[in-house]
Length: 175
Image (cartoon, rainbow, N blue to C red; front, top):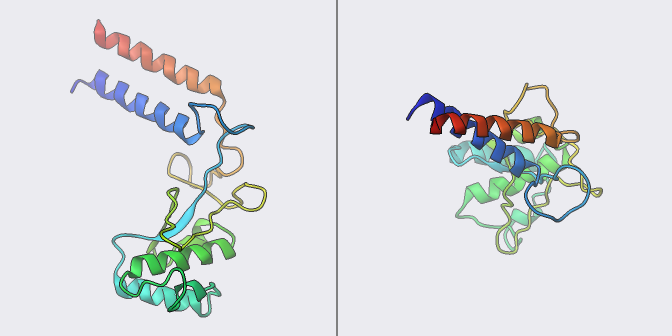
């Protein structure tokens, strides 16, 4: 793979990601940039013992609502500690400021944008009553202190500039 092609592909991927993150593409919705819903869930590679310890803490001193994971509750699943921990982690995250710190649990949790609800177990999301996320959504696209929650809208002219650069490099590949 030539360096020109690699750079062009990388640039195209970046543009696609930025457009998707803004809800770019079709109609729908009003207002500026898209709203991203987030959920705090257990990491797939977390050890069961670590998840159980985090559940015990969150349901005790942490103050999470663990009623739905109790026997008979809509989120009760004794055979799947990942699902159980995910519900507890998300409840704690919602109740404690919706920040990355509220979704850590000794590095056994992560923020995702795919709704983890399953069956009758409904996970509340990071959207509050006004539909705006009030925590930090650092996703590795900028400095660690950058807050993308309220003003992550990248002006469309930058998208067009990046697209033009991509076309320029694509044109160089043809030459």
